[in-house]
Image (cartoon, rainbow, N blue to C red):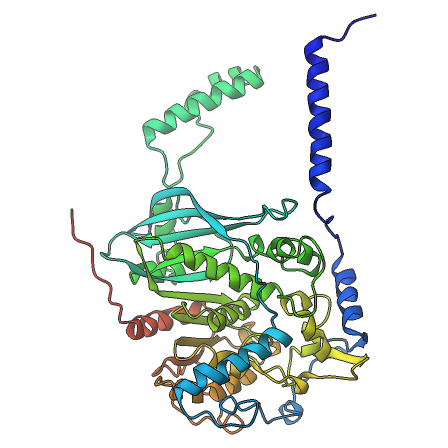
Amino acid sequence: MKMIPTFVIALLFSLSLKAQETKIEKSKYPPLVTFTAEQDHANMMEQLGIKALRPGPSGNESAPNHANYDESIANPCPELPDVLTTNDGEKVTTPEMWWDKRRPEIIEGFEKEVYGRLPQDIPDVKWEVEITDYERIGFTPVVAKKIVGHVDNSEYPLINVDINMVLVVPQNVKGPVPVLMMFGRPSLPAPAQPSAEDMVKINKTFKEVLIKDNPELEDVFKRYPAYEPIERDDPFAAFMQRRNQEPSPTERLIAAGWGYLTIDPSSIQADNGAGLTRGIIGLVNKGQPRNPEDWGSLRAWAWGAARALDYLETDSMVDAKKVGIEGVSRYGKAALVTLAFEPRFAVGLIGSSGKGGAALHRRVFGEAVESLTGTGEYHWMAGNYLKYGAEEATFGRKTGCDLTVDSHELIALCAPRLTFISYGIPEQGDAKWLDQKGSYMATIAAGSVFKLLGAKDLGVSNDYMKEEMPPVLKGLLDGELAWRQHAGGHTDAPNFETFIPWASKFLGYEKVPAMRR
């Protein structure tokens, strides 16, 4: 009988001990709950005592259950909660009353019923710059940094959260620059390429590795001695190819002397109900389902943006007092929530945000409260928000009209900071579903708070039921609260040309060329 070597026995014993230790270690923590979105949604309904929810409307106008687009029935409860009247009926007449009493009341309403509360024990984030690259965007030299935020998971090691983002700052200006933080997929814009000499070395080594793995390739490479498997990218050539096209938002920012930061929301919290026991929400809850007042994905993404701002406050190339937040669609909702709840952000560009963003909850036009309480979108909100889509429940029937707060008050929480509400047009794909009219009404109604705090609003009355939307391309840009509907689709890109000079003016920022060395 062949004997097993002693060192193999020792290795197997060591691995067995390690496996036992891992099992014992995991047993210290509550096991991860794995739900589908439907299961998690049902769990929240049970917690709330909801027996039946109303289904959300269809975006297809020819469907039997299509969304309402008739303005005559769009406002079942037209009187909005008065943003300048306290819960006990007192009129807010001074900034001090706003900051000390009314604003905290509104925040409480949104945290309890709409977006959820931040937990008391959210772990710290440790930021690490993984890559620093010197690149060019067009003719402009930039510094690009790939940055990862490692969230402390020592209290629950079964979940890892690493926040991914990329910061790009121009080098041709002196002094720290304003930065626009954007929700999206981060990537280095134009990674620096190896020199021609280095490419020769890379290709030589690559060929040798290929031949070693597949000796038949040696004859192939001999037949084509000049062939190089890896070609050097030319970012400048790519830029020249699109030089006659409209500049991208990031190109416009860099050309204006701004930096930008792209942060990945999915690295903070998944955009689905099945992910609510993972991500930062799952980490804090130790892998367990939410309670009704716990935060949803919108508030989690906003928390992640605030932590990214923590990093920017440590970067000498960034003017951390002039950092903005931007997003479109669901990320437009997140950008507005971020600006409302995190006072360190100086400016927001809120793109096509719809219900849950700038559009009024109690309006019945396009996207509905019932859309946000269904299994596809409920994870954006606090569990309590499901109550307002309830048809049958222990507490009775509720609708958006039962909410004590609405989106005009969310916009008001941003005052007196720079707030730019952006939409496109339905004809180009910014669907009526988003309720541009309802968002304009909310912006009008929020204006009274901007004026109370010494800022300018849209420059019209605050009568949200009578004021008509301005024509497309006519921006209302004279104040810290701004509105513009561009002629494009479901994007805010066409408004960057207007947004950047507007924000730069109010921030007091003028691009200053860097001194030549």
